[in-house]
Length: 202
Ligand SMILES: [Zn+2]
Image (cartoon, rainbow, N blue to C red; front, top):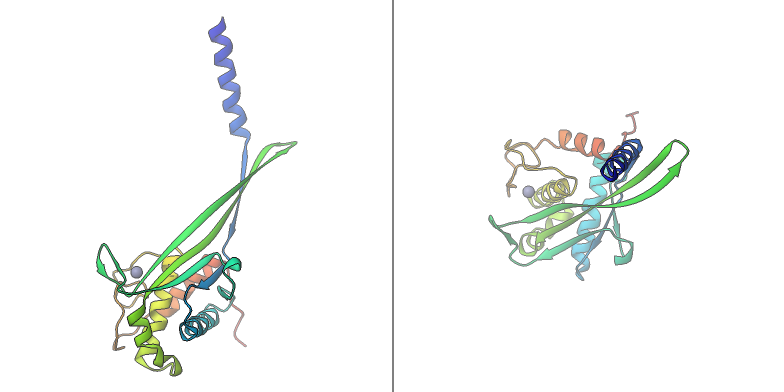
């Protein structure tokens, strides 16, 4: 008899869980803090982020002055390395979840908010060595830095490497641009990831 009661309790618990509704909100507001005292490096990131937003056709990245306003970080590292050897940059995406329970007449509802952020690192010698190129967007140095920036931000937006050499997410970045990089499909992905609808061309 005792056993039967316990079994019923378990069954009703399961049905309660079955009634639970989940509502998931995604927050993709990337606020980047440049963790470096060099004003030239910071100015370069501000400019690259501005170009990035322009290419997205919406506000994808915000560079903030105050660490407390940031959810994402950009660092410059001497002799950047990971398991695969030397690297020009590293990017990773981070999500944190916040859960809230609501009891409504229709049953219980769980609100889940997923906050997206990213952490980017750049090899300082490579980046600093190409800073002069920031003045000329047609220079190889500028193209390299912008490509590198887009690539690492791409990881920050959950993209993996591509085996296609024309893809922004191909795992090496040229010093000299003899091949064409397909930025159009990269930014199409970014727009769909962020839910940005580009303004129609007039
Ligand atoms: Zn990569």
